[in-house]
Amino acid sequence: MRIIIENIDPNSMKPLGYTQLPSFSAEFSSPVVKAVARFVPASGNARGCSGESFDVEIDQERVSGLERVEHDSPSESVVALPEPGAFRIHGTVTSIVPIAEPPGNSVVTVLARGAAFTLSGGELAGKLLSLGERVAFTVHEVSLWDEAI
Image 1 (cartoon, one colour):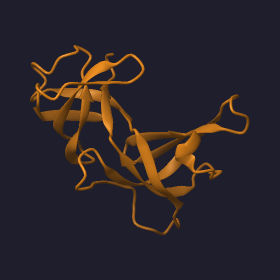
Image 2: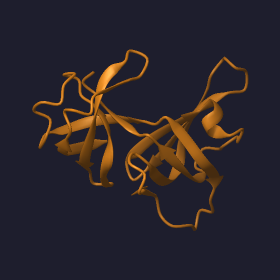
Image 3: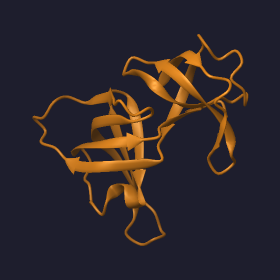
């Protein structure tokens, strides 16, 4: 997804991910949504990010409320919630990739207006989803990772 960093707080540095890369609280806009989330710049610092555009991958710390929805439900959407870094997603399952460990587990990609969300393990809440199925869920503590990393 392509975003524009509207404003970034250089004093909000928090390490994220397995490699503990620096992330910053950032206001961003995209064709999908305008909101606040953690941004992980490839440069490792916030300087020079405001006003710039970046291609990002989306990650989240937690998923809640995963449910199947009818195909005639409202169209795909990404809606910012009052909780910073939280979004309500209505999307379509576009990929299911089985993984070896633990047995029967898979990684599911849900697309919502061009924004891709990856769900696995406990995030799926034991649901076996199918390609093309419509789902809704809430993501919490979203981070946007500069694809140049």
